[in-house]
Image 1 (cartoon, rainbow, N blue to C red):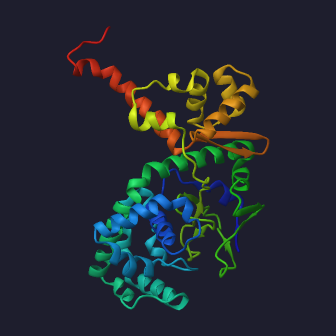
Image 2: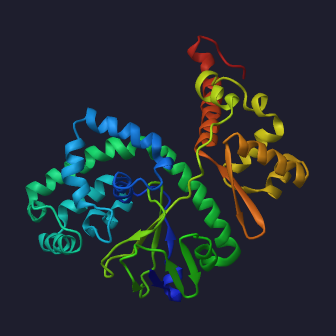
Image 3: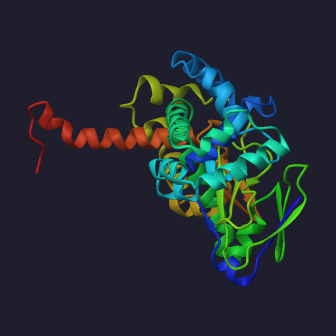
Length: 353
């Protein structure tokens, strides 16, 4: 159990990440190779990435470098999840290269005491081996993380929309109270279902905390081991059990991108889908579409059954947000509308004034 103590100053400095953190996603994705827990949620990714790693000749680096250095255990080196990553992946890689050798050796020694470090790991205090590690991290990111960034971003936007509801209703404490099921807010302490080998109290001392929703994190949140660092807590996004989207939706995505969204869904459901892009309650969908609340609920159920939206209950309201499939449908429609506006000139026709 991890108990995080918040003061009023900490609550004022608490934030929720707006985008995937590439290094925390690297860590969490490597953990997916080390357990079968939750494998169903990542089955397609697991199969595809294993093949890609073999094709790129990275499978050996995976097993001899990355997995031993970032084990699914109660500890892995903090310098491999740099706070500078908030400025981008390249900034994070530069921060790894700039880590003082003494800190690298100290964290490798902790890794060795806790789970056992690879024999070559102390050499990471030197410049050349660390540059090689950065090269491997970049190559792994290109294969296992970058192709899924759009899907991860869609899920994080959904999560932020849900947490904003809690923030508007109850302030930061309201947001923290909605972070379950692995976290429980008992003011002024956030109790976190952590690695079973860890039982500690973390006092933020006015620094606040950055919460990082993670696509690849499964079940338990993960944070930094060093309490002196700017504090970050990666926590898992919830995954619904996979279900196929309707054949009509698949035709829009795969076979017929010119089809009208309204013709596909009908005016009311098309409006409901657009409203859900920024997160909408059933009542808000009803007002946007000009229908009753019960009718809006039925339309939302149809969109949810088609795999276009997901619905989450918060207190007495239900918030509807897009799934990655729903976001893809709207993006396809947006691109089609843009093409329609400019397509005349490309075809040698002038548009009407």
